[in-house]
Length: 279
Image (tube, rainbow, N blue to C red; front, side, top):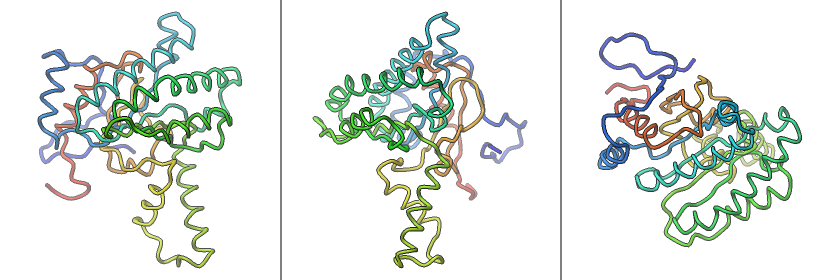
């Protein structure tokens, strides 16, 4: 069960995740974001986003499903630009495709999604490099078509044309349970080789082993935003989100804008994070 960290004062029980329908309009989003940027301790260093709602957006607009995904790309481009302006966010992880999508989506849909990923990465890599954005692709990349996989790995290896400002982790063919299983296999291999004793396996070793993989995120998210209105993790960063602040927005991903981000970051700034202790 997903629970909010409790405050010291009694209050009505909230939903499992707090919902935001319409962003607050007290001032311009740029002003609100600039105010947050002056308090680095209130800005998440690692922001994760479940980008949900592309297909529903296309259906609402009576447009082809592909248009929903292209609109989602525009929303992601805007988010990256805004996050770069905040400076204090060092890692942005976005959920682009789950490992379940590979087996549960029609082949023709997967084909054009792979084409979309390849085109976006090809078109955006240089622009991101010039802005100091390091690309990282997390997930079971070996399950992707070879051509796409090669494109992703080449983009991740591209030298930056400017000092690094942000790591953009794109979760594609990703599954949290698969990641845990992959980590267990890596540790089991070391035990079988006599490098480790079973009693040496602890949380720190599991975390270090997982983070050492080039197909995993480098740190735990501080804040996870999910658009689209659903209240679940959908197999995303299950291990890493143990103490992540969770926020669900009813807006569909292509509608996500700076006002929604400001609302989410303001909510994060109000949270008290004690990680099981007392403040």
